[in-house]
Image (cartoon, rainbow, N blue to C red; front, side, top):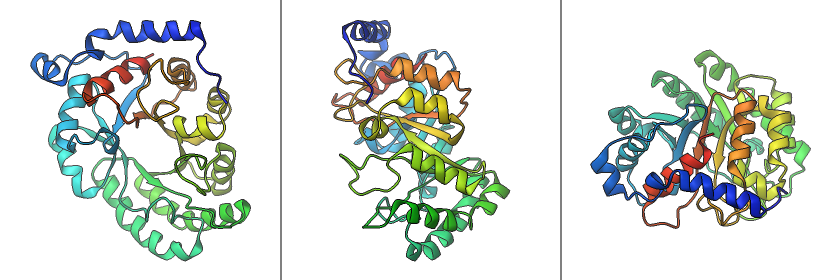
Length: 293
């Protein structure tokens, strides 16, 4: 596991936060009044997951991210893309084809329905100018991991030619099975990397969720350095608690972001933390600044 932030790192983290105190402490009302986006360095392409910013509507979040200084939202399906398009906001990770987290590609009984749904959604993703579409391994339910990997590969290979044709990347999310998603199969990056190798397509990658992998395996920076070519997207959140990326949690995000930048990654890093603060946009703005290396 990544070591908790020591006192020196806590001080460094505070400096990062204080450096962005103007926006970090700014209320969403004040941000709307000023309408002056924070000038990002441009090394990290930021996004945010809508569900974690509840009760903000998609429209409110579109306005908020533009004011903070970026323009991408994760996990929006076809029915709501028109809201993003109205505001000129990218859908950095599309959904809408999956059956849910527990019922994924590791179960051959799901393949027929999953293939049908992905064959419908993949062309829509491309038609709307998007690139990434999420998928899940599914839960083990007593299944051996090797069998599950082979099942995933068998099913996914049937939709990859269509994804390749349309330039869409199918991304399987790495989720922890210790705290949040009991029994989920794709809960370690080595398993996911082996699946990528088995499939052998540049249009299949892993959504590396830093929060989830901190819980189930740690050693985040080494994982990025050794396997970044298989990671097509990143999610953030503080651990423990899945809250703000502040000095009260153990992950030192500036160093992780530097490793991502050093790897040559040009995709999105999307924030998926659940703010304790009532001012969701101020919390998001602070997270963006912590990760803006």
